[in-house]
Structure formats: C-alpha cells, structure tokens
Length: 326
Length: 245
Image (cartoon, rainbow over all chains, first blue to last red; front, side, top):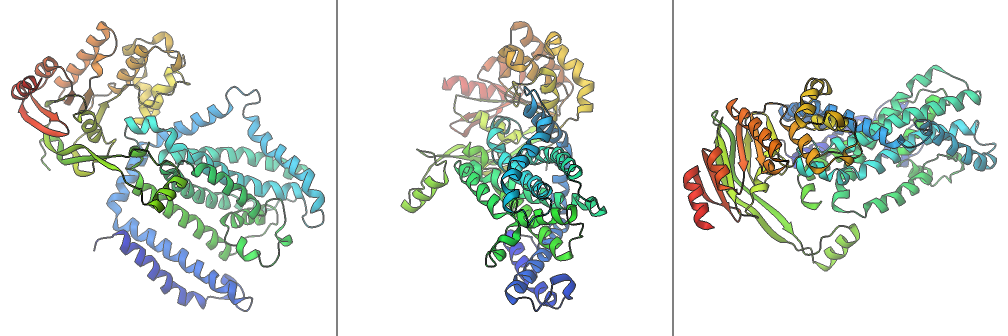
C-alpha cells in the first residue's frame, strides 16, 4: 500500500484514539493522580497518546520509505561539511571586529542577568531562592530557542544567491543557524556555571541530566526554524510578527517570575506553552536536584517531535517553490 | 533507464508565476485573498522538452535570448525542479552555471575555496589535496589570504572556474563562461575543458556562437520560446539556427 500524506494523517489520528483508551488505565505514577482534576487528566492522556502516535508515525515513515530516507541521509552526510563550515563562519562573523570577541557570549547573559536580578529580586524576594540561578537557567534555554528561530527565519532568504545557482539541500541553512545558536548556548552555560558557583548553590548529580532538556529544546527549535524559514519566503512581514510573538512568549514563560504568582486559571494555559516545560525541566535538574517524571518527559518529547514533524513536512513540501518567490 | 545515456530529459515543462505586483506580506495576502485578487499570469519558460545525451557526448544547446536555455540548464543541474516531467542524471555533475556562486566577499580566497568545495559536497580533507592546484590554476598564489571583496571580477571568475573544474566530473555543464578572463586564461579554460572531454566527460554547452557549437559538439538542440525547434545532428541544427537569424 502506498504511504500518502492523507493516509499518514488518518493513521496518526486513529493511533491517537487507539492509544488513548489503554493509557487511561495507566498507573498514577505516570499520569498523576486521577482524582486531581478531570480537566487536566483528559488533556494529559491525550498528549500522551498523541506523542505515542507521532512516534509510531515516524517509525512507520522510516520503515516504509526507507529508500527515500536512506537517500536523504546520504545527501546529508555528503553536505555535512557545508553545515560545519556555515556554523564556523557564523561564529567568526559574530565576533569579528569586536574587541572582547568570544567573551561577549559569556558577558551577554551575565549582564542581562545582572540587570534583571537588580529589578526583580526585590519583588520576588521571598518566593524564589537564589534568583540569579533561577533566572539564568530559564534564560539560557529560552534564549537558545528565541535566538535560533529568529536567526534561521531569514536563513533561506539570505542564502538566495547560493540557492539560485547551486544545488545544496536547503534545510542546511536553517539547521546551521540552530547549530550555531547551540554553540552559543554552550558559552552561556559557562556563565551559568560561574553564577552557580559564586552564589554557592548546591551541586547535585542531576546536573548531569541537563543535556536532556537541551536536546529537547534543540529538536523543538529545529522544527520551528524549518517551519518559519519556509514561511518567511512567502510572507516577508512574518519577521516582524514573530518578534512581537517572541516578546509575548517571554512573558508567558516563567523566566523572571515564579509560577506561583500566576492566578490559578492561567496555569493550564501556561501548560500549552512548550517553552514552559523545557525551562521547567532544566530548572528541576539543575536547581532543584529532582529527576523529572515520565510525564514531563513525554510532554517535552511530544512538543519536540510534533514541531519537528510539522517543520520538516512544510519545508520539504515547499522547498521547490522558494526559488520562484525570491 | 538507458544505461548509455548520461542525461535524460523527459517531457520537461517549467512554469513561472508572473504576478503584476508581487505579494510579499501576510497582510497583503489576506487582503487580496478576501478581495479575491490572488491571480497571477502563468509563464511557461519551457514546454515539453525531451532529449537525451549519451555518455561521452558533447551536446550543444542553442537559442536566442529568452529561449529557455539557462532555465533548462538549471533544471538539469538540480537547481530548479520542473513543473512537469523529470530529468534523470547518471553521474556526478559539475555545473559551471555562474562562476563564483556562493562566494562570500568578506572571506579570504582560502576560506571560499573550502566553502565552495563543501557546496559541491567535498570534505575539507579532500579540498586540502586540491588546494594548491586550484590556487595555481587561478594564478592567485599571492592573494590566497586576501578577502574576496578586494578581488577584481576577473580574479573571482578565475577562482570560480578553478574550483568548479578541479575535479574530473562525469558531466560538465558549461553556460557561456568561456567569455570571462583575458585571452590567455580563456585559452587555459578551453584546454582544461577539452582535456575533460577527452577523459570521457559528458559535456553540455550553451552558446550563441554557431562556430563554438560546430567546433565542439556532435549533437545539439535548438530552443525557441521554450519549445524544441530542432533536435539532432549539429550541422542540421546550426543550419536551422542560421536561417532563423
């Protein structure tokens, strides 16, 4: 049987429903106490089954279209050096002609932290322990997302001269931007460690789990970047809209305020913000020395995979048209 | 597919949108969609082109300006995807469509060589081996660390040609690039292309000049307003082209 897009969509929907039923009977340790609130329980199980369905869908595509996938992988491997060089060039361009050079990657989060800490640590004095670390752990995750998506949005348009003349896989361009933001994140992480040590916070072994939320955020950002870079070709004013959206998202993510100050009605809304989950995950391993339960992992993974699927799908479908609109 | 052919073009058509005022914003798009003004004119740059090029053959593409030659070459090079039809390529392609495509002026010749190599899918290690030869052929030994924005047009073109032809390709696509550089360098380019032909490369040449095509090609195609006017032996095609002028 042919694997068409329509059939895949129907399959995913069907699988979501099929997974939904047995998942309701899962032990409390995974989906949380049933009694807590039906309003929260049903969306939770729905997310769970959706993630499972998307994963099954991805597996199905990988198996049924293995020839196509193999071809794509070998193309990617052929052009991996281009990816590497683009990231390197980005890095050099960022710091050339600046006196402090790479130090800026370290200084930037530190200075931002300093300013915000001065303002907000008075307001939330009794609600947040170790405000600088609380702020920075959220900031580096969120900063990575907003920087990578904003930068990659323009990546297709600004590579016009290459895309017009040579064949290269076009997804390399947004991908390179996400990778160079990841590189930047590593420097910001050094700043985070510095503040961590200075403020005398407790190290715990859960700190070693920090790559997990970073990987989730990376996959999520990659998906969104592919989607945005593709759409920006057709709608140039999306850039302005997106910068407004990012500002909004900054306030909707508990970066410099504790979740506890939010009115109870708003909390479920925040639950639909993927960035909240990634920031929360990073904080719980770095700051609170807890290992997130399966449920948080599933939410994070679900958002990441969904973004990646949608982004890849839109990008691959539209990529032949870019050249006609540039 | 036919094992003998290097390039197989199957019923290829290419359509471009010609809209009078291009819609570039979401706002405009919504306004026009509401007003039902989302019309555009279709422009067929190519219509139902079919031909195949045998391995080792030197094939010419002729036609007046706007006949669709460059569009056809880009489709073969994989830059455009045809609206209808398909192209089968058998072997590694080296397109000399536009020399210095993807050069970044801020960076030195050395960086650009590696970058350009990566765009053709070569690893930095592989480029290490070619590096000296590329610089030497382009005669830029003294300028390898100079930023490209300080290069003259001729120097950039020389570098572009040198990189693109540093590897013996199975298929070489030449789009009138021989017109760059001074007489001496042009001679060098021609020699290199001839060497590639004698090494068994399949070559696709686009040119306005009847004499170039006659001299180098065995078969040719003549395009007129996106359609095949004449396809076959080079003498026949040149005769039709000459009559048309």
